Image: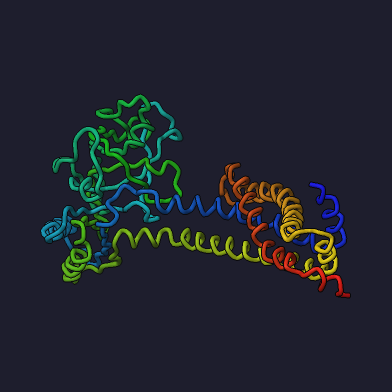
Length: 405
């Protein structure tokens, strides 16, 4: 502790270099802590389960250009053929899939008297009776759809309203917090219009939009959507997806009245949807590494310059009895003072930067525990960075240093 005063006075002889390193440490703390927070957020979004059997699911998007074609019959033929492919566990027509970035949203009311602006939003998936199996969902209460539950939605023929609905556990809890959703009637429009009975509750499935609020609030409705094309979802036995996708694409491409717009595994689709987040995680990781390296090199450079400038002083201390350990400790303490000053300034910068990002880009408020982690990490970086110059200073021979001019 007795060395702190002389060390502090020595730093005042190189105010500019000391200030620059301290400000660099402050800036590094502000950037890397906020970058780490954003990385954690984006990474958590990417890896969170969608509810599907992701590794064994594939999808096809088709468009029909023959307006005279019987779409319902074509869909029946397609489903029969797709389900007969060896290795296919289930195949369904649907309007969307989770984490696709494109889908249908809707609202439900539990009371006919509810105002139109008080509905509970959900992600709407239109499927047939194989919907649960194709998506890999587990029915936790109630029953699945039956063939007689199915209705059609068509631009030419209008829409038939389904009488039943399956909801996710999250949506059931949002609609009926007391846990008695099964068997209850909900309404798809305000005023008690378009009633649906909840006949089943499944475990978990996300909406189509990764950033949507209430992302686990979804529902399956027994609807054949006939809008001039179809999205088919296949679920294959483990290890069979690649072959199943190839055979399914061969079958679908034989019909010259349509085109296959998209043929992807679900993992490929999810990768595309999160491509921006993945790129940001990689970019911010690179920023943390590069900025940490630059800061470390800056500390090394300042310490090396200090050693060069003070060779005679170091030699004199050695001649007066200072050990190598004393010299190393001197530079470690000196660096600790610089680093601590920078970190104290950096705390303010970190909070200010997080406030700016949250206010303008809705990144969220960073948990306070990021600060002590960042402080410790940068303090240790500073100590490691100065260790090599400190050891070089400790190796200066006393006689050589005292003869230098």
